[in-house]
Length: 448
Image (cartoon, rainbow, N blue to C red):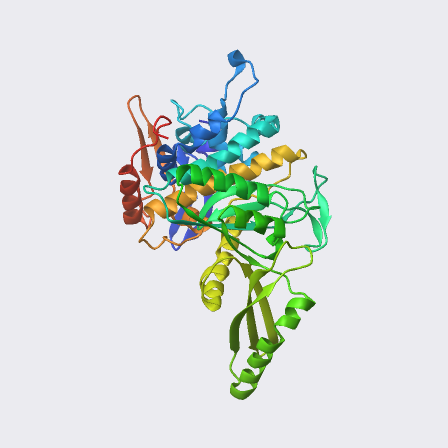
């Protein structure tokens, strides 16, 4: 213990009481709730599956930090709120992270930021392809019985870049240099997080990804009903034709154009008349048969004719589903907006937009690391927080309330004890969550 460590730090007094501090509190961590994520991973086997997707070109005799340890550092670090590699220069000495990485000694330092940087930049495209299959397989194993229906939400977003990263381009709609990642969700569960340059059609590769997903799901669940849901950026007639031929349903936004506006004149006039008579917002739903010049045939288009205080508002949705137009629009199509909330969790809560590597492949790997952190937190939310105050909380709220817990780590020859902060306000919830996770069967590769 150094003289600096023993020297008390003096602060302003409290009434007549002096306030002093020192650095002799013992081995502490501020992330004790991360042990819950370790329990989640023991059920999912997520880290082990990701590790199996990677190859290590290093000399085995000189390896100090194996692939699994570095994946744990990065994925659990992101889940616990540490977005930067530089954060690990301090976290590598945190006893909690040593426990998460299953290190026999909590005093053993983990990988440094340069080691993690080299790890990220060693990944190749073949490894990315193998890693990308893990979220889909994890999703499949999450079902105890075959689902009757899967609604796949496709959405693209911007990932702003501020350097000269490989694959950066200026995007006119977003008005900045960015990537254009593609995400696919089924309800809250993440299936695809695919980084793309921004000088492309927003629907690029969506058809191929949809085909792969449909093929895999029908291998496991032959009778499952699959619905593609997306905005107008994914309304492409070849994709719709493929869906028609492969018994895949779709409900897609379609951009306004003079032909569709002309076909909806009568509906809009009725909405406007109703608004003038009542002064109350009017919404009318109907349908038309429409085909753009490039389409192979006419398709059903739902028309929402709405008149508000601000004026007329038209919306168009193309679908091959039967049913009431308003019901399809309100209860099915409009629910796609929840996928945008999941993307916000990825980018704002789990730093999926921290794509600051020069190499494009390394940045795609970072997006997948963020996706893995999301899978852990979403599994915790769905499986252990249902019926609690955090049942619908976003990942940053879960992190703040359930994972960021101060604790003292005491390690002996036979056991490690985590003394949690006595003033932690959600003790009962943490106990309930842990008991729920411990009751679930642990994943093993053989059973998967």
